[in-house]
Image (cartoon, rainbow, N blue to C red; front, side, top):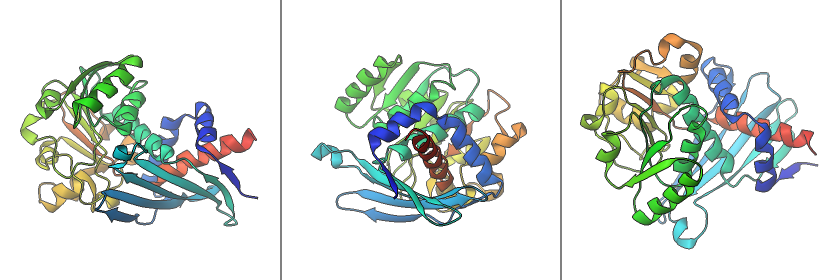
Length: 318
């Protein structure tokens, strides 16, 4: 009989999993052409605004393949229900049998996305981070910051949000975890004081301009996971010393890279893929003066890695 695991069971299993390591290994497998990842399936809704992603694939020679459905409906906060939902289906690769259903309610998608931000920071953040800037005071804005803790030695943070009410809640929550939080609704406050910036919003228009970015800044842009979203002015990528994609093939059609490519401001030959950069230190940040940008559109190999690790841990503990 197929195992079905609830969110509480899934969360309990995570204490035994090195999420950042698992996601890093997934990116390497992807760039080494060891993962089979079909194009993303998605549905975009207007009224109310929301999107549903279907991501799936497998690592060659592995035990499992995974199909993930994850949704984000951004006005759910008005209804006092979560904005994120979803599940992951884990199948046995050799027989096609459904091994388990992970009723994660979108949590594993959020977790693997935050872990990807930590992986990027490990290889591209400046050695000395003066201040961290976060665009987005929601779930991902929190989780990105939490996952930077073991990677970046900095607790001084400024966060941008759409309302002072949500910013006040963010400040209270994250200061409880040991961060020093300043809030703002002005992007210039972040650009002028931070050399590590994370954008974690569903914005459809740029939040940062090229003329705002200081020398030595690293930006992780992870909100633009559908073609119509855009958090960075494309000139930022043109001016950057290094531009990194989680998946070059995906970033042709979505994310900050796609916008810059369509505008003719960058060329595909100038883009690095994250897994390759992890393997080759010459492709990583080599100077504190470099401006680096990582575009994270979310790759199914991340879902494979996190769901596989969770299932193995839960199955062992049954």
